[in-house]
Figure (cartoon, rainbow, N blue to C red):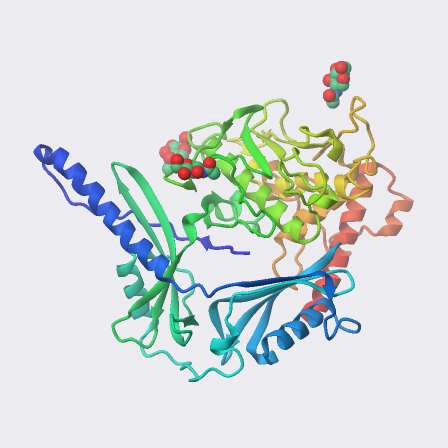
Length: 539
Ligand SMILES: *[C@@H]1O[C@H](CO)[C@@H](O)[C@H](O)[C@H]1NC(C)=O
Ligand SMILES: *[C@@H]1O[C@H](CO)[C@@H](O)[C@H](O)[C@H]1NC(C)=O
Ligand SMILES: *[C@@H]1O[C@H](CO)[C@@H](O)[C@H](O)[C@H]1NC(C)=O
């Protein structure tokens, strides 16, 4: 999954100087030509990047991995990769693995001399018996698999500053501020050269509007002139200004630009089905009017709307910013949950299920600044069979501060709400009947909200909590502090491993019987289990 957080605002590059009114027409043509020329040059560099041919094989019901019986998922996959490609264990490293209800996937990165090779990755799909069912790789073993013909240098001949300058000049942009890395670039003949990886942001603003691209640029680290070897255009996908997922809400760090976050494993056709905030996983619109989606702010799928925290949620561009943030987070949660097994076959929310099981037609509808209530948020889940109904997330404005606060830019609230949908669908096989307390008008739909029916919020608070934890040092978690304008948030205690901070444990149920209290006990238990697990895996 590719996440790029650009905390630096991009610069606008004004490519053309002043011009006289008399030249207006001619200048118009000149602008178009120059703009097109620059775009063409950069597209050629992007196209010239070497993408080694991919191999893809499937094995029907599965082929036995050498380590299947005694190994873990990762061991079974890497044993297969080593035997299939003739690699030793220092020839690759595991980038990620995920087990699912149908088995799992393991992704590896090719390394040489401990240096990653750009674009050289492989993935293995396994069934529940840890047999290999699919294998894909785009590194050509004949070129540099076992022993590279000439061991490529590991030390650069130019400085990273020189590489940054070369990349910015060639791609007509400015350095993003993202860390510069040294990796191996695969040349046409299959040989490896050491390259600096520099991310450059380039915006052309002229009378035709704004055109923004984010280029991952590869600069020859051995060439004194800083030759650009190739580039990837990250913004061929989409750009969102949103609250990064590790942050609880917009008050912590505002919004940042997030470039091309889609996980194509989870969302093979991307997040958008039109040039607005509608797609296969969610449609996000303003106050119950499904036609009022957010439209791009620039050419392509660029949703770069600033949020002004000193004005009201309904003022200026705030509604567009709020819809963008909710669209981003809802889709991100879809993609993350998919990796963990909330897929078509396990009754997830998607318009098109791509023939992978389940019933489609049930993306999540997200109504931002929904005026039907306030100081709350609500998620209504319909059963998978209900077709066309899916789920409805209503994000209300909170009026406990001046100006009031929009729960669409509070990741804790959005993550909490969407988890009501996940848990309702994943228990009981998509019927939505298991975690149910009320059957709403015979439709078997369940409505859950932050404070009106909080008895089932344990899982939802836990998911919002996990999303924010970034390492093994699990921190205390306060839910809903910003929307509620109260440091203690919406629960009795912060979730904590310290019984002095949160005294709730299972035995508390002997004296706490209100449904509201049960959810807090469950969420605090989950917090403690998570902290224990994290400290175990990081030690
Ligand atoms: C968005 O608009 C562009 C240009 O009009 C078009 O080529 C593209 O297919 C549209 N994208 C989607 C997802 O509809
Ligand atoms: C933000 O909103 C406040 C209050 O409406 C206004 O005074 C200010 O100019 C706005 N800031 C920007 C950058 O638009
Ligand atoms: C349920 O149906 C009744 C009667 O039709 C209606 O008044 C009520 O608003 C409905 N409730 C919900 C949650 O849809």
